[in-house]
Length: 534
Ligand SMILES: NC(=O)C1=CN([C@@H]2O[C@H](COP(=O)(O)OP(=O)(O)OC[C@H]3O[C@@H](n4cnc5c(N)ncnc54)[C@H](O)[C@@H]3O)[C@@H](O)[C@H]2O)C=CC1
Ligand SMILES: O=C(O)C(=O)COP(=O)(O)O
Image 1 (cartoon, rainbow, N blue to C red):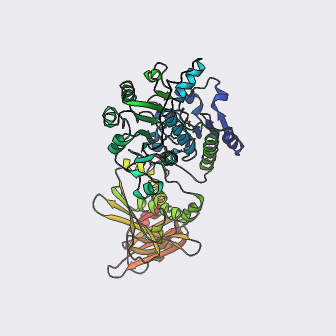
Image 2: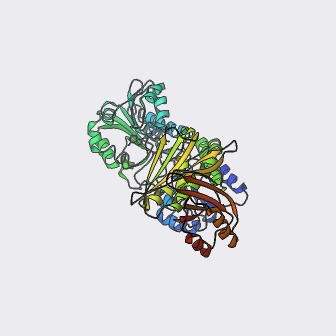
Image 3: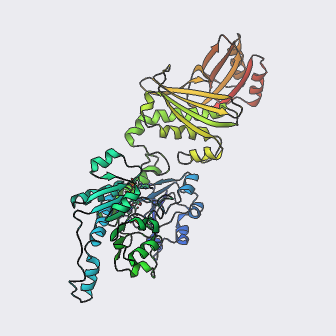
């Protein structure tokens, strides 16, 4: 398996990948000496690669994905994945993973450094000293003590910045729609709306991803709401603060000081007007550039990529549910059951399914069932679409126009836990299969088909049929299958005395020939049957 290291990650991480049996590691800058991670260069190396490790420089666009037919994993040694086309990767079933947390402290500390530089003009004073001057009057500053800091985006980095601000005796306001009051209380900060952050803060710092909601969140109209002499910082993503509006606000004197680490377009253009603004301190996307952070994220991503490609655990995936090893052990039999039920129902139902409903009942409802949903979908799509995996299964289902509904039910059931998969068809009919885990070994079994109790395996070949409840059916089938040299491994019969018919499942060792299937259907008591391959 070929792994491409496209951006400079920790050498310990690269070594780890090289040590993995069966891995061939291509270190981009060793192969192409003037490596700039341009699309042309990336295309030269990515053609036969199964895993790629990147930071923020290499763009994994839809075009790149299109020329990387073997690509299975994109590992981002860091947080932001805006350089990766997640939609295109998901469509292709490529796992995109990052390493949240590894560079939190480094980035929080750089933010604080920027805040301090915006408080005491260290960068400007240092430059003047280097230029041979001694300008004591020019470079006086102010104090953080007693000031109000507004934090937009109170996630990992925002929270660390807030803690440091509190240590400097600042009051902290936070705007983050996803922040709970209890977390705000625990951090000793006040959760407010964006307008309050804008109007009440002496310092404003942003720590969110760049999304449609956050793009230009700080634009001309936001600056108009701010105090005169406000100080602004962006160590998150270029474009959250609109650069042209910031430049105007600095020039007009509205903004007393500002610091940027990230830009709308990177690298920042040589002739960008931002470079000429004295009150603005610029750093070239250095948030995560500490020895500690790079070692942490580089080693972590190497481990994650290796594990995912070696068929182990998938951690920190952006486009599929992640499961840790302990949970995976618990979930494994359920995943087998879920995939089997999904596949079973798809093969049982006609092709006009419009909705898939997964219902969890009993003990299982206490687990994180998201990975199970994916297993059901993967099973359902198995015979419909090529290359379906946990990454792209929901997208593929959506493309087929099939809606997904998942329900956690607290209703009494015959089993202590039950997974039910129901296909709702365009004509209003439904086809349903349920399953549970049997015994201490947690053996997955199908226990009901369309509401009729059966007991069937979750692997192999099943003959499912509906018949009139008359004598001789089992003998007839035994004879017909025997003539076709098909062995019956087990059978489960379920009859409905009231209606006079039965649903039965035979587990077979091989698929009966078309002739044998036609002969079986000739029996007037066999109403319909399906061969289901699990
Ligand atoms: N300059 C650099 O080198 C680095 C930059 N970053 C960037 O810093 C940012 C934050 O990273 P983390 O704290 O690790 O992420 P995180 O996911 O822990 O925090 C992001 C926070 O933003 C909030 N948020 C999302 N949408 C929002 C909205 N519309 N309005 C307000 N809040 C919103 C979320 O609720 C979350 O609490 C990311 O953009 C990341 O890419 C991260 C590391 C290094
Ligand atoms: O982790 C992030 O989001 C970053 O922006 C860090 O970027 P980098 O890995 O230093 O290119």
